[in-house]
Length: 179
Image (cartoon, helix red, strand yellow):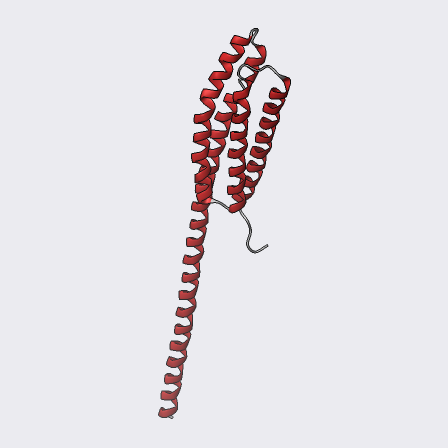
């Protein structure tokens, strides 16, 4: 009878050890999974923050560029050719640095992506360059064709900018991987 009590004790001890081992492995796996989940969430948050910062920088540069181009209203309101040309020259002097800032911001977007947002940022910058190219011929030339070309270039810039904003917003949305 003593032998059977010993066996029961040994079996109970082995069962307890087995259960403890299984519990420890499960707890270890759960802790590892939690650590991976936390690390992934942190990496995604950091990526989103970098993207948001890069996108905002480009948007700020696009706004500064637009502030230069909106001065076309001053040109329209000017009474004489000399006044119109003075404002146009000022615009042309300021538009280059605005595009330079936009170019720098566009490269930041390129680093953080994704690819479709980067391509949209390129289009915004390219359309801004087109506005610049149509601005210079307006100096000294009051022809409606030149002004129409400028207006069309600005509309293309604005459309590219609006498309960029939509893609950037989509890239910042939190996606549920389970659904």
